[in-house]
Structure formats: C-alpha cells, structure tokens
Length: 165
Length: 356
Image (cartoon, rainbow over all chains, first blue to last red; front, side):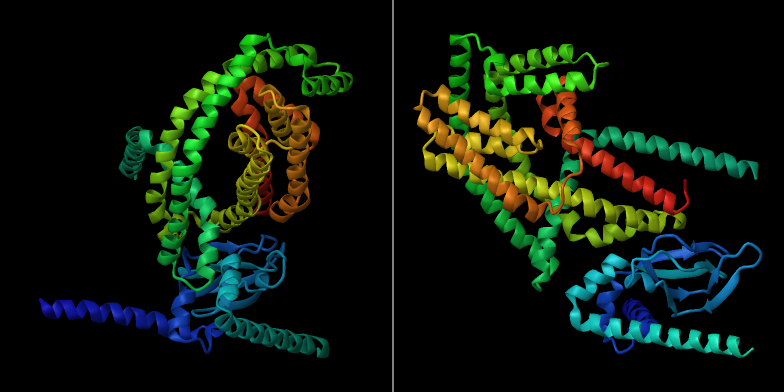
C-alpha cells in the first residue's frame, strides 16, 4: 500500500523533472530557473499532429509560437514544382518566433514529418507574460534575439557560398 | 468496415440526442449561465489589473468580489429604495399629466425636429413609404408613453428580482474566473489543427473590438449616470437619481440617446411645475455632462469612433423601435454594431486561412 503511494509520488515528480529537463533543452529557455519555467509552461497549449499534417502555410497570419515536444517538423517554401526545404527541426526546437516581433504573415510553411506533439504559445500570451514578468521576459527576449542573430549569420554564410559558386 | 460506420452513426445520433436532452434539462438556467459568461467577460480585465499588482488570482477575485458586494450593498440599501420611491412618484406624475391633457407628441420640439429629419430623408429615399413608417412609429411611441407608468411600476417589482439575480451571479462566475486558464486549455483541445490558429485569432480580435466596445459601453453608461445624477441632485431636481440612471441607459444609443436624456430631464422639470429658469439650468447641466462625455470620457475609453454612419444609426433605431419596441430602440445599434463587427472579423480571417 504505502509502497504504491510512494511510487505514485515518485512517478509524478519524475514526470515533472522530465518536463523540466525537456524545457531546459529548449534554446529560448536558456538560463531560466525552474520556477520561471513552470510559470511560462502555464501558457502552453498542447497540439498533436499526424505524420504529413500541415501545421501552417506561408501567408497565413502569425498567431502562435511552437515548441516541439516530440517528433519532427519540416520548414519549407512552397513552390509549384518542388518545395524548397529550409530546415528540419526535431525535439526541443522552436519555430514561428518572427511573428512575436513583426506584424507579418508566416514566411514559410511547416509540416509534421512524424507523429508530432507541439507546445503552442500565443503571441498575446507571450507579450502579456513578458510585460507581467519583466525579469524573465528579458531573458526570453535575449535568447530569442540570440537565436535570430545566429539565424541571420547562418543565412549570410549560405549566401556567401552561393555567390562564390 | 460497414459495421464500423454504423456504430459511428449510432454514436453520433446518441451524442446529438444527449445534447438536445441536456439543453432541455439546462434550459431554465441557460440564461443564468450566459449571463455569468458575460459577467466573467466584463469583469476579467479588472481582475487581471489587480493580479498585475502581484496578487495571486484567487485573492484578486476575492478582492474584486469584496468591492463588488460592497457596491451592491450600497446600491441595495441607499440607492435602490430611493430609486423605487422616485419611480413610483415619477410614474404618477407622468400618468397625471397624460390623463389631464391629451398629450400631443407632435407638438413637442424634439418630435418637430425629427419631422425635419424625415422630410430630408423622404427626399433621399423616395421609394420607401417613410410617412407611413413615421406614423406607425409615432403611434408606437404614444402607446408606449400611455403605458409607461404601468411598465415602470411593474419593472420596479422586477428590479428586486434582478437585484437578487445580480447578487447570486458571481457564485457561478467565481469558478469560471478561477479556472479560466484550465477551461481555455480544454476548449482549445477540442479544436481541430486546421482551425486552431484561426480560432485563437478570431477570439483575440473579437476581444479587441467587441470586448472593448461592450466594456466601454458599460463604463460610459455608468459614468454618464453618475455625472447626470450628481448634476441633477445639485440642481435639486425631483427624480434626479431616476433621470440620471435613465440618461445613462439611454446613452447606449449614439446621437439620439444623449438627446433623449436631455429631453427627459427637461420635460420632467416642466411637468413637475418648476420655474423655467430651472429648466434652462437642467438642460445646460445635462448638456455639460454630454460635453464632458464627448471631450473626456468617450475618447478615453472608446478610443476610436464606432464607425457606423449617423443615417445607419437613425434607421436602426427606427427599425428596432418598430419591430421590438423600446428595447429594440435601445439595443438596436449595439447589436448591429456587434454583428457587423463579428461577421467582418470572421470573414476576413476565414479568407486569410484559405478556408473560404
């Protein structure tokens, strides 16, 4: 009896720890404390996608930021002949952050290439969170800035290679 | 394969039947539930404001409820008996006036003004029989004024019911307010992926346009009621509280509502046999309230204009009055504004998400 009880508690805490270790792996949550993470995790809306299901298309309005809990997502540009794959994202990656900073529509399409579970955070919830918890918000925003700066460097390098060729 | 389909069909039928059954069971408290939802919707921003100070959700709700109930107690013990007293003597004054002399509405300056409007409209819209419409409206209005004393008296007994309704409303709402995050999450779980972002966007936009409009409307009515009541009480006018409250409610109708409030105050001063100077002061005071509203209150809480053309507003009030009576006149414009806003938001976003 009591053994069972402890097992239950252990299971619960280990599940929480699992979540925590997962969230720690996500780039934009770097340097966030446990309590900060659990506060932010309250905003998560869970979405499940089947293999091959479209998550969003280019030109759709920007509404949420996605974090991949499990599975794989392909980001691509739609083309009449062949889709141009920009990147292949796996667990603990995130996508759709551009809409947090600019009032633009989606700049690429996203598709689940495996059975995928995503955490969605709406733009409004994110902004409200940053406003309400500025200390945590600054960390989040710096991490997002770093991510986008690296992305810019990356695409510059790609462009350079293309020019040399 | 075939039996699977059959089972699915039966399952769906059972679900539909259960929903119908549930509707019948819950029918009697459906209005109560909808009102709680409206209450939650209107009140939530205030609670978020309290939360933003750094107080947790449950405590914020309790703090708000404390203020809310204190206000209700104030209204119930001081304002409410005063209002009832004023309503009954107000009704008697008006019914006396009507029985004394046959009230010819067309002689009143406001109606004469309306006549001018109609003449202009008649030239604009020759294909609609406006004269008949106008006559019908005047008959309705006359009818309403004849019945007004009785209506007010019967409403005042209903007021007690409404009051107890208001008092118990927050109890259901408490759980809605407290668990709204959980409820929101489970609501979004029900929505298919294809419509997920669309639904979020539409809800946010509705909140931005319609929510703000509704809250602003309530706020504005409240402020106008308080200001008018203060002005009329300072001037020492009979039925000051009642007219103030009515002016606040009438303010829901753009353009015409404020005018009606001023006319109500002015005509009451004349009917109660006060000197003409007081009439001037009353009209001036009510007009001053409108000035404050236009210059300060409206820009501050509405932010931007309700983009309905005055002609649309006048026609809506007219049509609402003809079809649904006084309530139609009062709520016609908000309802038209809300439905057009809602439809345009939904249409635009369905297009953007390539659903239509």
